[in-house]
Length: 295
Ligand code: GUN
Image (cartoon, rainbow, N blue to C red; front, side, top):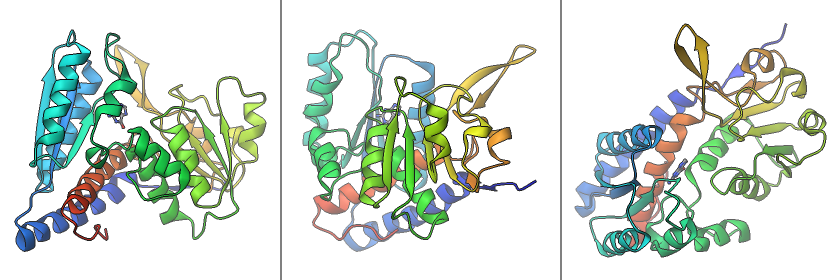
């Protein structure tokens, strides 16, 4: 039985981080500049703690400065806005990331709108969202950017391909669809109200699953030869008191039909942080009127 190529996001991300590290070193040598990223974490969500630690460690590994700001879960919106204002003004900080989700007392849109768009390395500020949709240069959200890099590495051209994005979040689904449209794909966004999701999937040359539902996309929903990008990171009960991480796609079945597929873990996940570092490097270059990195 045919078996899909496994898209090794872990290796791709390691290569990208190495190239970013070389550019950071060159930037320090030529201009005495060390890019800095500030990560703001409100509350003590365990998964967010892990992400923030990993972001910080990998930033330091590439030679960047990393600043973590941990704020208590009951932080007021005003206090968070004061913190963001300080980071907007801090010349050592080229990129700011506010870890989402935020506690209920804080209005996410107000916080994202308060970021300096030039330092918004998540690409969530309305200015960057608008730039992406209108096709102008701006910061592109990290996870969709990582997915696009993997797709471009695998496919010679995306133009004219039918792409289905399952999930309509602001973090992944919507920006992913905009990026694929920019690559001249014919795009469909499916979501919880979509009729005949299986039928939509079966038409897709490119399928991006970003719904947060463990193994929801079944193997017989995959078009033969399709490229499948699984953004899901779901922890499920593996029996015997253990858990394991699975994606939004039933990998064991989909791998028999797809042309290529990202595994979970080791697919999209590592690309997200690598793209955060890339966005930080790009932001630092732009802020100093230097050419964008070529990595
Ligand atoms: N929470 C889940 N994904 C993300 C992300 O890409 N950026 C931020 N800031 N928070 C997240």
